Amino acid sequence: MKKLWTGSMFLILVLSLYGQSLNFEELTSKEIRELAKANVTVIVPIAQIENHGLYLPVATDLYLTREICRKAAEKNGKSIVAPAIQLGNCSDYTAWPGYIVVRNQTFLDIVEDYLSSLKQQGFQNVVFCLMHGGHNFNSIDIAVSERNRELGMKVQIVSMNVLMSPIWKEISELLLKGKIDPELTMMMALKPNLIKDEKSAGKMAQPQLPSFMGLGRYYDPEYTLDKIAPDGMVAYSEKATAAIGEKLMDMLSSGLAERVLKRLTD
Image (cartoon, rainbow, N blue to C red; front, side, top):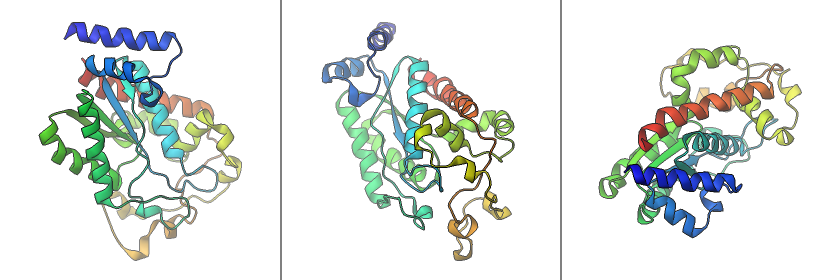
């Protein structure tokens, strides 16, 4: 086993030194075969295309999840990032244009086929990493529990919310106790050219969320998301900065590398 880890780390080091990406789709077939033999962990970003208010693109979750996974793979040194799954169920956000929704069964099939494909190529360790929880997290859990009985792989499902839990106090202080939109700060650091007008966002009234929304799932036509937050966002601030975003991505990628990937790769 020690020899295999040395081989995987050497190959990743060589790829990094020659400026080649650790993204699955940018590697050659030969490189992928060698990485599978070396038993590296495959990180699969999962992000829904959906509304992100007046100033962020609908692919915000995709950009951020891929970047956090990439940073985590670099820190771990024994992982690669696979092509992202960009489809799922975002029914809460269908009040606004900019979404692609697939049925839960379709999403289940995609996840199961994804796992089967990785297994066929020799990969054993997989981490599904989501920006949020919700419907997609539940569907992945069902798909993995059913399919993996046959495949026998090591699979971890994690969301950014889960990664935030142990360091929530520090993150809360960084985001001024919910007054700063974390996704805005990270996009300011990662893709500032795609932000439409973050200054106007800071002047908008912050929606008041009903207290019961923090007490588990609740379904009521009187309390749909578009009625609570007409533009689809629940936190705004002129105090958002790229520096905060860089810090937040570093904290989340470190959590993914140290608390999830390390356990699978050691």
